[in-house]
Picture 1 (cartoon, helix red, strand yellow):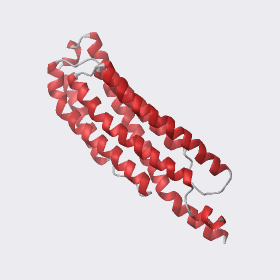
Picture 2: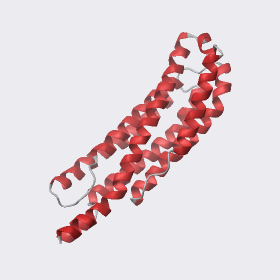
Picture 3: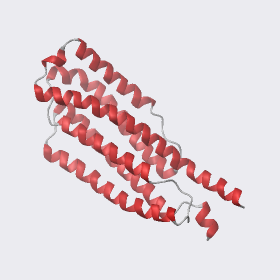
Length: 219
């Protein structure tokens, strides 16, 4: 029993990985609706439905995380700290909430037509990254590359610079201008939190190896 506890991941940790993967998959699905709403608008009822589902998944994840930390405290298993992963997923949800707020107000056609393509590519890149991270967590393998995400966000940022250089940002009405700048901030924060997610997934991929090395040294 002692050997099995040391060499194998705890049951609670396995459940945390599965629940985190489920949460990431829900976020990837929600992302499609939110990004579409950035150029076409999104009503409050749809936003509530999207965030309620993710919120419920996070609540369940926190419960499982507490169980996993109880197992860690008894030293029955050498497993990663669940805290960083749970906090990163919570911050990613906050990013989605911010995106949803910007989607309430549709951008003028002059902006929407210029941003629809960069946002569509960013949506695909980020959603694919979330799904890839979900699969990596469950399989305890390394995280996917962020290069596609960073490339699409750089393209979006370049278009924003062009719009501002042309003076179009000054033509936005107050509420649209607020959403326009909030969108840029939300995407920047999401990029930072995806980098944190990458580190978390890498830690979870390495933890079983670390456990085996520690057990071999102890023997």
